[in-house]
Length: 117
Image (cartoon, rainbow, N blue to C red; front, side, top):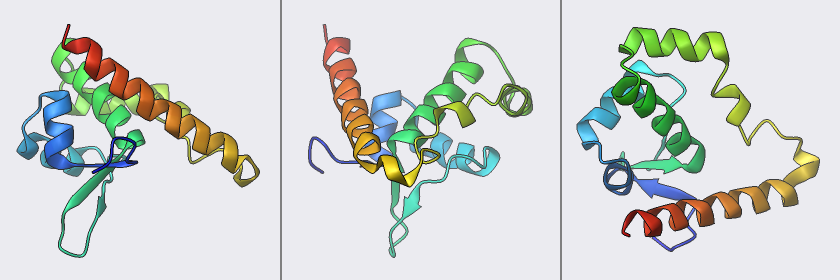
């Protein structure tokens, strides 16, 4: 995986979020908007959007004390994840979308670097 890769394996995401892989797989079943791409061999590849969604889920469940069903209701009622979808931008804005995705990757890397200090 390169530094600027758009997709991350379950082990990378697990380390980044400090959540065991089995929990990430469980959340995929419960939260239908977390949909990592899968290779032919079944290996999961999470997009930046998936990681943002998982961070929101993690915050609701671990920090704010929501149950899984409560978190699902909260997200549906507040459209929190829909506001974050990069894919909803017009196809005419492909260069802008690409720049946003690159910037998101850089921010995530900076965040990881800063966590070390």
